[in-house]
Length: 102
Image 1 (cartoon, rainbow, N blue to C red):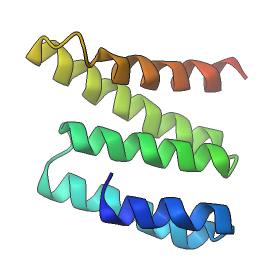
Image 2: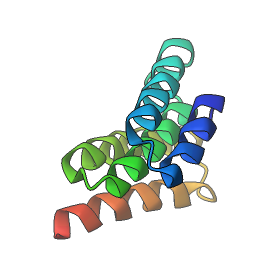
Image 3: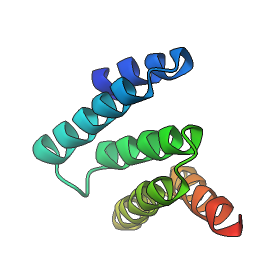
């Protein structure tokens, strides 16, 4: 989680959703710009953004972010052959499935 993500996370319980969304967008933008769209930290930002959208009851936007995170995690861990960290991939898949089920 980036500093922007932490700040956004702290704003959500206070009901400052617009401000939190701005910070989550900033977090994702920085990760994309610096690390690239296929970096694991970028996937983490997508997961954070997806969780935020679920709390805000915006399921379509949440689904998009969870799917992007899933794709990055899956590609990263397959390339690295790291089975122990595939729990992140499974978490993203579970979030996608939960939204699709509803």
